[in-house]
Image 1 (cartoon, rainbow over the protein chains, first blue to last red):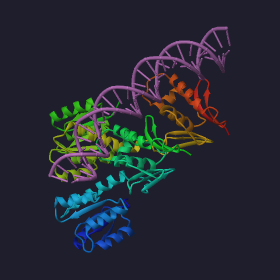
Image 2: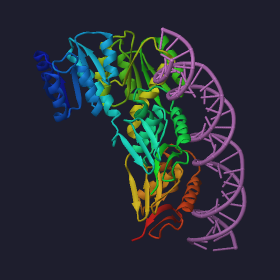
Image 3: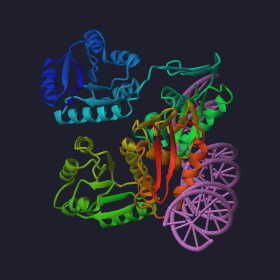
Image 4: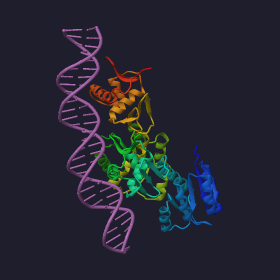
Length: 230
Length: 230
DNA sequence: GAATTCATTTCGGAATCTTTACGATATTGT
DNA sequence: ACAATATCGTAAAGATTCCGAAATGAATTC
C-alpha cells in the first residue's frame, strides 16, 4: 500500500533491527545507516521520504547531518536522542527537524509520530518549487530571501516573500485564502483568513507599477492569483 | 451563512452547554451526545461536518469511537482530554484524529482550531479540480478561475463563470432554468428563475462576437444551451 | 393580435474586498 | 540582556463588486 521510504541513521544495531522490523511491518521501505558519513550518502542515493536520525553518531553527528540535509531538501526529519535535554529538542527543531523523540522509544509512539509527521509534511508539499522564480523583470529567491525588480533588490518581510513566492511559483492558478494559509502559514496555523488580504496589500504596494506582464490579482469570491499575461 | 454541523460527544453537561452556546453563536449547528453509544448513533443520523470527541466516555470510550468513525468516514475529529499526556496525543493522531486539545479549553482556541481543521479538511473540495473546458478559441478554467477568449483573459464574476462552465461542459444539451438553478446555484436555492436570464445576458455581453463556432443559445419555451457548430 | 416567453434595464441590498490603524510579537542591534 | 526596530495579525471602517428581484419592452408562437 505505502511506498514510503524511511532512512534510519543510528549506530545501535539492536535498535535499528527493531526499527527495521517494526516499520517494515507497517509497509515502509526501510534503509539503515550506522554512521554519519553513510547517512549522508544513503540519503542521496535512497531518497527517503523521512529520516529518523540519532543525535549521537560516529564520524558526523546528528546536528551536522540535520543541517546538511536541510540545506538540500525539505525531507522530514525526526530526531532521536538518549538524553532528554530540553536543549536538544530546541536545537533539533531549530535546525529544521520536524519532531523529536527521547529514547527508549515506544514502538507504538514511533509509528504514530512517523505517520503524523508524514501527514503534516505532505499537506504542505508544494508543486513546482525550485527555489527561484522568475517572471519578466521579477525574481523571487527563497534561498537568498530576496525580491528583485529590474535588478534592484527590494526589502520584503518573510511572510510576504513566502506568499509571493508561492503564488508566483504556481502562477495563474487561483488559491483561496484558506489554501494560502495552509501552504504559506502552515497547516496548523490558527487565525483569521483576512490576514492574507493584508499581506497581499503590502505586497502590492511594493510591486506597484513594476511590470504589466504580471500582477497579483483578486478573484472575486474565490481568492488570489499571480497572473502572467501572454 | 455557515451550514456546518458539529457533533459534541462528552458527558460533562456544563462543558457541552458551554460549547453549544459558543459554537451556536458562531453559526454552527450543534448536537450533543453524552455517551459513546449515543455518540455513534448521532454520528450516523446527524451526519456532522466535524466531531468534538472526549476521550473519557461512559459506555464506549473515545478511542474506540474514533476508530469506528474513521472506519466509515473521513469526517474530521478533534479529540479532547483532561489529561495532557503525550501518549494520548500521539494515540489520537494515530487513530486518525485531526487535532487534539487539553481541557480546560479556551473558547477562543476551540473556535480557532475548529476553523483550522475545517479549513484543512476542506482543501480537497476547493478550486483546483483541474477542470478545463475548451472550444475553439474559448477556454474556461475553474482552476485558474478565468475565461479566455483568443488568449486574452476576461474578468467574469463567479456565478457567471460557473454557469458558463456548466453549460459549456455539457455542450449542445438544453437545460431548463430550474435545472440550471439546481446545478449551478444549488438544489436548495429559492428564487426567481428569471435570474438565469440576467446572468445569460451578462455572459453574452462578454462573449459577443468571439467566435461563430459556438454560442449561448436560447431554446424557446425550454431553456438555454451552449451550442457548438460542426 | 393576443398570449406567452424572453431580453434588457435598473436598482437596492448583500457579500466581498481594501485600507487603515493599532497592539502584539518577533527580530535585530548594541 | 536590553532597548530599538520591524513585522505580524486583528479589528473595524470604507469602498467596491456582485447578485437577484422587479419592471418594462421585444420577440415568438398560435
